[in-house]
Image 1 (cartoon, rainbow, N blue to C red):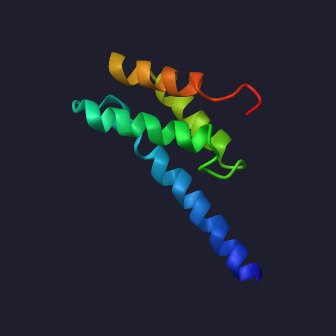
Image 2: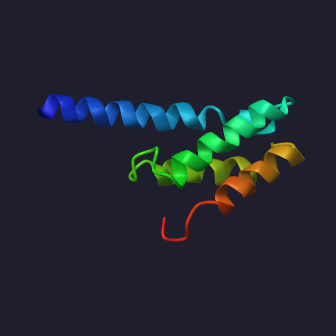
Length: 90
């Protein structure tokens, strides 16, 4: 049983890392790609698609991407939009 729990935790962590790797999609040229990326991040952070213990990691990666000032204005806007949809209690 512990092996199954560990595997579940590994998959969840992998999901957070995979989501973080898609941050560049928030500034994609294709608007449909941007919309899908925004929705994935909102689901992950607001609708608990990502385990609660992994959500701060995802949020921190978004803040870091914004803070490094390496995103386009579209990307920066989308990061702010995603973060604005995260409930304050989170």
